Length: 198
Image (cartoon, rainbow, N blue to C red):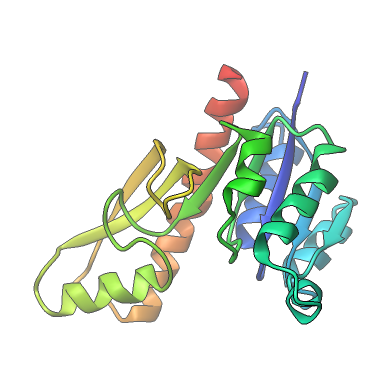
């Protein structure tokens, strides 16, 4: 049976596209049952609709405007997603840190793609921070990883990782492009394994 995936995005959805392509090519035995975005203008929503995948736009702002907190948002979103009975929830460029109010509903079922190696550059702007460290002569490589999501940011058990070395003539843009290409490959490989093992 194909595994049921929910993909959470906030932006252009290039990692989502890598998953969709792998499913269509039968390289990934899975079904994307829903794509969620917390940003209405996310190009990933259009990618999902083009692929015939149901979408959910679920913004935080109405909660904060009404004086409700992130915990309520997380609990309500978890309830909505539970109806889809996902085997895995994949955070692929999802720019919102989930609280335990969300995580407890899907224990051991949420994985995140992070553009840095374990223990290095957690949180936002990881590629920029790694590139700056390289320019200062502090590191020779960075990379990306897929990890299980826990309350601590980018600190869960690592599913897969890959190194992306810096080249002497790298600009931030050229390095970023190589990291994103590595992300697309790594994400599909990690999901292939998780879908087989699950």
